[in-house]
Image (cartoon, rainbow, N blue to C red; front, side, top):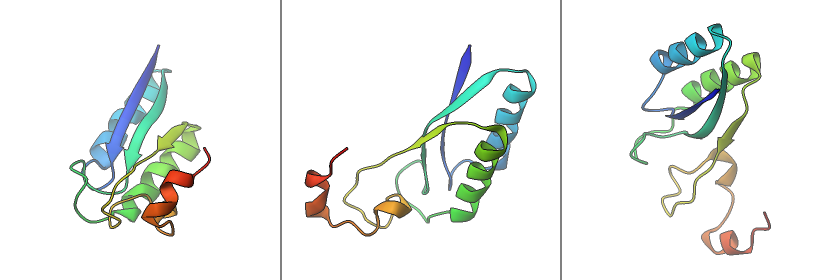
Length: 94
């Protein structure tokens, strides 16, 4: 059995990381199926401090994760997408 975690850094913080730790303490697997840097609504401020806390937890416990988003609101997309222009998205080779 494995659990999945889905979080947004501006909406879910230490209280949810505590739940992840409880799952791990029970010897169960967990995978972060999706996460984002803003609020769950897609709005709000980027919480890079919370992102660092989450990624630190993932690294320490060797938890795999997937961060993804496609949006026209460039204030809330993943940090590594900031340099792309909207017209470039269609030409990305994945």
